[in-house]
Length: 178
Image (cartoon, rainbow, N blue to C red; front, side):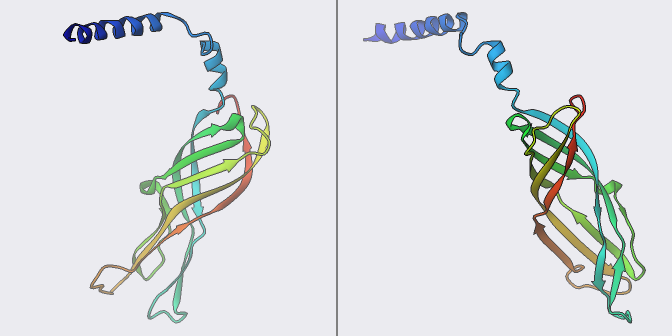
């Protein structure tokens, strides 16, 4: 009985080595190369422009204050899948490079977006040198916070956060693998 256990390991190693030495006719390099071209990685950069807004401000005759747009640069990593008909991506904001116009009356103002995750569907396959329309959807966190000058907050400044789900429509142009 003890001899059988000792023969099992060398037999297993022999079978493993023998199977590695044979070339698999179904999964050849040519087949794998062709069948895995349904996806490729993308890298990009963009500017997210937030339209501004209004916020209540005590002591202001209008009762609110307006602030202008915010521009946030972002880096995007994605993947085009399904032979050019779909894209999944993640965009990372670079808030240290953002431009934000702080209105008078505010000591601090933060209006920013979180990391965006989304999908785009291309009804016409992406092709080099061609324009392709797309429809998409994503989700990201919206965060707003302000501190009025001369005001003291016992528990920190007012903060508003909300998960948003933007819907997209647009055109994509693909050039030599970029």
